[in-house]
Image (cartoon, rainbow, N blue to C red; front, side, top):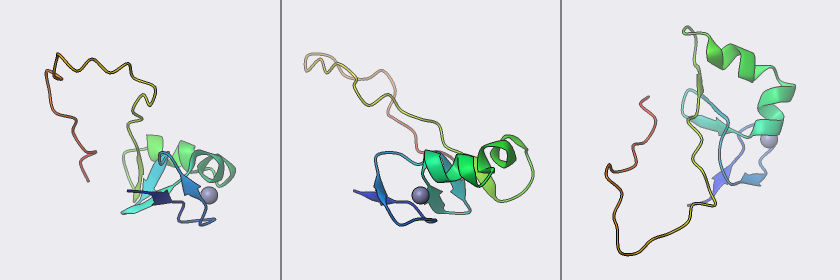
Length: 72
Ligand SMILES: [Zn+2]
């Protein structure tokens, strides 16, 4: 599933923050000051737990825990 930044509409690999349920990419989030907002516990801007993309795959073993989506 491809993600599109809610602010600029560009496709991105991962969101940096969520405004409500809308994903925002790292560049826009930084420019809009959302990284600071997301660290606060109040408001509608949430930080996204970033996953490591270049994870070495080992087909013989499974992850100990299923990947969890960020709780909204
Ligand atoms: Zn953007």
